[in-house]
Image 1: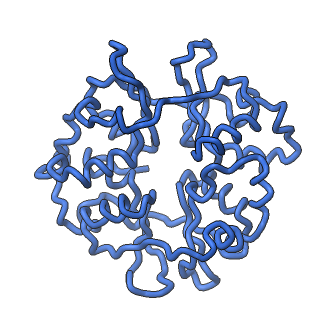
Image 2 (image 1 turned 45 degrees about the horizontal axis):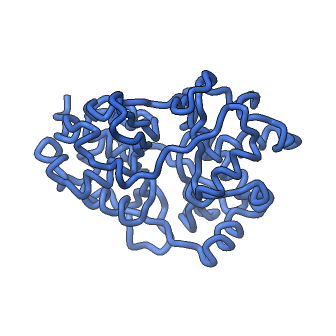
Length: 306
């Protein structure tokens, strides 16, 4: 078994993140799809916490993402957004689906150690609700990005258990996993539905020769409102170009990149994953693998990311 990084033994209190995190705001399960989209637009977010059916205001039972809503609407295009509630959406049944980032909330106390949460993150959980049983500190949502950012800023929390200078082809358990792609002839909606179906946070957009020409991720639909849904029916490259005014070159790395370099790139560019390519200097490289935040966190706990 791989050695555990020191960060596994830290408590959530040791991270000192509560003062820098926004308060947890949420909707009830009776909220409509339109209200959920408005909530995300107002908060410039890609997800909305959903309170439990018990009606306890402080109890969060699920997190529903904009990708979940887009996926649902792709199968139910005639849905009335104003009257259809999150709770009644057939594929958004709270707590009943293990395949998406939404639904079951992972909840921990400030004094718990991080190890089990890091394992959950490596296996696909995206967020954890951190609460204080003594009610002396405010609750907040811890994300995978928070963990990677902390580790990058505090390398002593990772080493000597983990050698940050090893190439990712050695330090990460599975770099050359299948890369799901979107071809440049699909619409933005089709690309986003594929992301949700495959359970990934981003896709490289490739040309007819399999070379990366762009990248689409959940961040590209941050704050998407009800009126923005129609914008997703255009070709994916047109959607990305309209959003950023120019196609942003995807961030890539070679298999020889070190774990530290990967962590720094993920933090610097605020991205979920890096496409692994044979030649990182090529103008349009072909992806041969992908390394995500889940992979990095998995390395901390010796767990292969899903």
